[in-house]
Picture 1 (cartoon, each protein chain N blue to C red):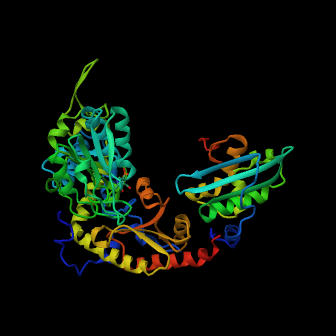
Picture 2 (cartoon, protein in one colour):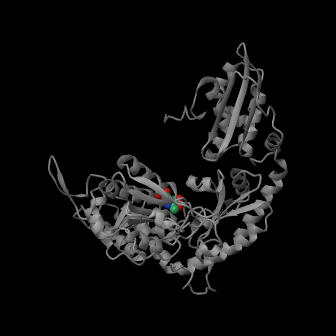
Picture 3 (cartoon, helix red, strand yellow):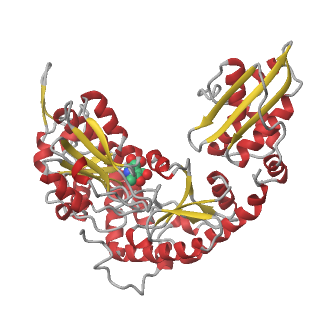
Length: 132
Length: 422
Ligand SMILES: Cc1ncc(COP(=O)(O)O)c(C=O)c1O
């Protein structure tokens, strides 16, 4: 399957929830040193629910489209739910398989979100890569 | 000035690229997409004769070296030492004992930094590198600097991507103990005047280490002609296998240097408290080495010699000239680095408004393999004010049509992505 699917290009071209928030409850930013992709996430949280959020940054189509899709997915959800989101959830949103390098592009937004909300600094998916 | 490898090259009209491609099984695979491999600067493809040489070791005389008093071990030892000879001859080393086998360029440079560097450098000394170094010729010196207090200084580059040598006398002083520089930039392809710099370094009593990872595979490198003190290179960029690299050193230096890793094979005699060490090169080859890979690398050297390094250089230049011409026609392209004449076969660029990862991703959809990223040369990226670039690099098995595919792939990337910019 082609990683340059229309759906991904649409999100890249006109991303949802793009920008920043004034007085966000959570704001976090990080980049992927391998390619310089960068994402910042701003969140408003009321009673444990994400009432509003924005992302901004720059990078390749995959990193930006994944961030846009992720913000659509979690808006209005409980913040707790975010902790449970995994690598596979992102791959499902994107709807395409990703090789190991592009995977990091796809996961950057979730990484930023988890780091901002819970101080989880690792790459999603790498927590469970112990040899069985 | 220095002798440019192009100057004495013959004009070539019978370089048979199809015959060469026939030597590489990987290029003959039947897949949905062709394999248009333009990433040889990262790792080159391996001809069948190299694979067969390693296969022969494993199938007929696999055994440890320097130990067994039996037929196959003696054969393995002889082949391993013969490999050292052949590799020494390639770079015109005076003696085969000047060839130390390592894992790769990175390990070769670290060996010098730990062994020679720790024994010889102290606070107040300086190590001169260039802005275009691969991280593997920068980090070992930064680490050495942290251990010893010696300082790392930089030779800058011009906007064209060649070394800025005006004002060199201010950088190269009696505090300079070492120049560690790349012979060829892995990003820009720039060929540096290392012979001239080596002479200047020696005039102030500094030693010279050349990172030959991108030169030894592409043209004739003569350690006596260049008069370098150390030369480091990797097998996997010159048609050889991974896991084998080389450090060449001048004999008196290698002999004075303390060991790097301790263990089997590097000793003369061992007591409980202390030991005496084997002569070079064994002193620097602790533990069982990469025997099959050394034998494979020697087969790669034979292969390159058979095709002829001069012929390869000329062929690469034909590709490079064509690539420059073809890619320059693309609107919104920025090509980094000097004109083809001053380079080996690599071209680095960006397309306006498209992330290098997306360029490489779309090229992959048409079977073109290129590198996108910082190429382990972040100081160089910073110099050009970019985070990443795309690099296409060529070797003996590449053909002109593949550059057409590259160029068409880039136009495809623009069609898909350019008007999508926010
Ligand atoms: C100029 C240069 N130096 C050093 C290296 C490191 O080589 P290796 O990874 O084989 O140690 C490379 C590889 O990309 C290189 O291009």
